[in-house]
Length: 191
Image (cartoon, rainbow, N blue to C red; front, top):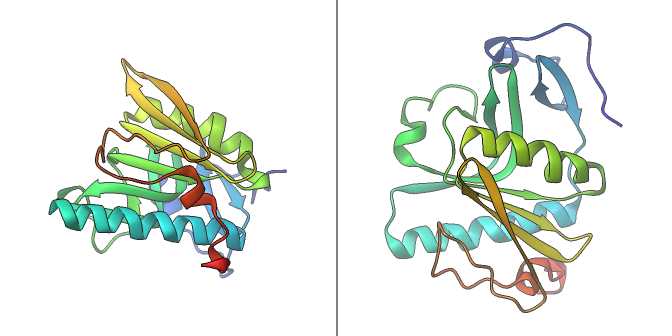
């Protein structure tokens, strides 16, 4: 169930300044604030693992890119989503350094880790918003279904490839990355 704060409509600028004095996290959806539940520990650890792997690949390739965790992506006039991870060029956030951590141009890659309460949001809403925004690649990491779906933008729509088990994830943004679904989804507390 999605919790709305009020029926008041917020502009993107007002959303960036919103502070209700709590630790609640909000997405802006058609001008309305929607509470996003805190992630599970599995969710956090999967995102952390992916961030480390991507950071290492960025460093190995000496790319002027950054992997950002738990920040926002502006997806419309009155829309902003919280993303688990995204990759941007350093130039994309250079002018935003002292503003709310919301990327206002399409990241090169967005990654969402599915939680029980985020299934529809990750598979449906973010998929359509990220495609409309022009995000070239979108991963849906699903520990519930034990799969990773990689979506690549093709003429405004996403082509989808699903990876499971020992399958090596194929990424257009990181073609030499050697991650498998099992590596990503293995219980991180047993390492």
